Length: 116
Image 1 (cartoon, rainbow, N blue to C red):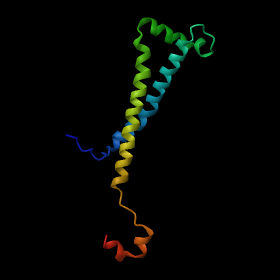
Image 2: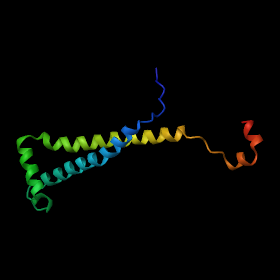
Image 3: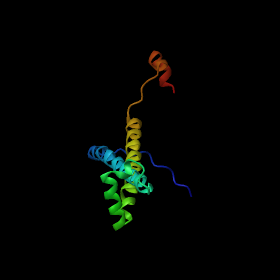
Image 4: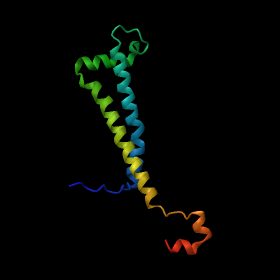
């Protein structure tokens, strides 16, 4: 039995502010994880990125626990996807709740618009 899709739900004002603030943080974590992967994949350290101080710290953290690279990369990616999806659904819900604008034809001939 197929379930009917629910209409988009509007977020509370504090949720919109929180999601908007967390989105750049989440993207920054994703980029940090991505740069860590790039720096760690350069074993010969030919790239300028792999010779930086943050790359040394990332290699040190990875030597302690390999999960340190997965946390910012995956957390930032999935967090960004969740936040973008929630904000898009909120925007869609706001548009669907807004009053419908009348077309030019309906403004010119209001008697025809009432019969629809």
